[in-house]
Image: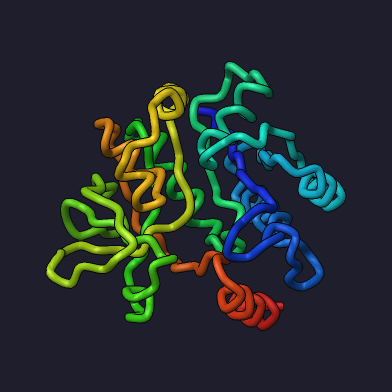
Length: 244
């Protein structure tokens, strides 16, 4: 099976304006994510964006990028336009890697791809164990509830996704910003209207669940921070500068 990785990105983030082009170790966040996806070696990598500045930056750093419309309500709608534009019928799986996850673990990206190839589920994603209790209170960190305990070998169905942590619930994990779609599932997903649940919680994965599209979850080894706020950026800079 052939996988295409598409990274949706735009400059007009409300919480941290200009986020994709903010630099860590002299390289933009979006180019860090691109290089991480390439390192996984699961297929061609492409950035989908409405901003020429992002395209210029990605290409300057040796990556590929494609210009998409400004009207998209979600990153998934954006990656579908990019997928249609490249018009490659050989692709079986489309991986949507969020453009603000420069610390995503390469092995975890490969594992998700392998699970999707092996199990042929409609839609897959990753989650990690919540080791830091601060995550529970952070509404920027999305939580996923699974049907049973996640372990290194299973690929379980998600029951729900939430921003608020519910202590009485079992099997709650930190949801990571990555999805892998079967080609037909992606086509079906973008044809559906945004659900009221999705709009209320600002979580596009709820559109899938509300329309009977199952989402299976693999356990990630790492628990990376996404860049949502200035505090996140400072924390990630510390980690990435320390590594170098």
